[in-house]
Length: 505
Ligand code: GLU
Image 1 (cartoon, rainbow, N blue to C red):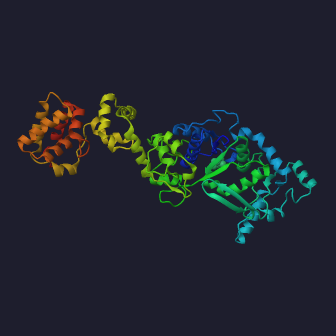
Image 2 (tube, helix red, strand yellow):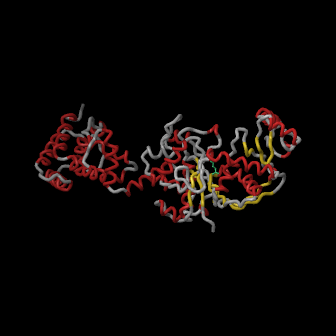
Image 3 (cartoon, rainbow, N blue to C red):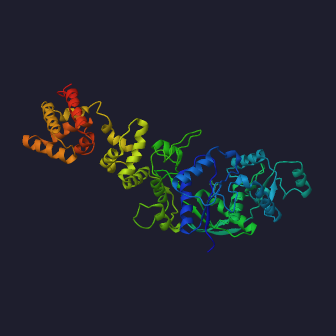
């Protein structure tokens, strides 16, 4: 088999949608699985849609995801340049070649004329298709005499070059995901290949590039499937071999109704872009929301592909081993924001306490807390299994860093009795008498005291928790107080007693 060469070919028109990241991922996995080459090509021939910053955003996103580009605008390679605007000079000759072979023609219709025809068709309840019937009635190099159309070119009149779609021909081709497809050319229109601004359209440019860059497999979004018959016709017209094609299913909204959009994310509270987008209409990103790239990639890999086993957690290397285009689904994949969080939870559990402590220290630093890493390791160990993100650790542990400013009223009403202050004072003196303040030594001493006095364990421990935490939440009490240390524990008991008092206020 010839070398596998695949490309991810985004247009820099804004932030990269996670559907685009998934396309990049599947290309990458396919390349690595087959010892092939993963190429990044920037498709910027549509000057009107170019957005400043988008190209850098794409590259930064791939880097964050761990999708290492083999050939691209930064990496170089033997088939460059890898940005279409830098290849601009190259495309014209291919449009000319098609013209010379009778597969393309010059068309002089103005945008106004086209609009009028569209409106007229609409009035009759028809959709306007620019096909052989229409072309014979318009001004182009097929209907005008050679002298006439050449004179128009000489006068500098705007024109486009269109593909001359044959009439009533069956085109057969294969898609690796969708199987054999047959399309009749009469349903297709004469697409523009070369525009009046001197730029090729996507159809011409990507195809020329795929050929020149020796792309073996074109793996891209399903939205390009309707254009595939045209592309197959173009390959034939050039006399080039077609690559293999695989059109990936759409990413759907959580309710399964339609394509996943930024608006769904805004409405339901999740990002649809890998990174924060800082320009114009700003958008949140998975990275800034605290996702690990490994979790994000793992989640995306399973949106449209399944390994055929129950396994859900895959490292990038495992994905490379397990991936196959044949197991990519035809149907759209519904995006599930809860599942995305679940993946992050799984990856967070795999972190060592030391790794998490370092990450949490970074989170605390701008908030003015400088805590010893060993203490943070103990802390994260206490709450790790309850959190999905590093930022959740803060929500679970804020009371470790500051004594409660207030006490849960409902808990006071239910759990605070008139003799509670006296019992807590006794507890304070038991704790004060201990030389060792480890979880087990405090627990043994406190439980022995409760048993000896015949107190109710729940009553004592709830009141204890209330003065230490401020509410009835948090990990094991003796883990908490051991972390806080004797002095802070006694201070909090004292303060709780004096603020809550009899609990009647
Ligand atoms: N530039 C196209 C896009 O952004 C690429 C389509 C393709 O991969 O052929 O969707």
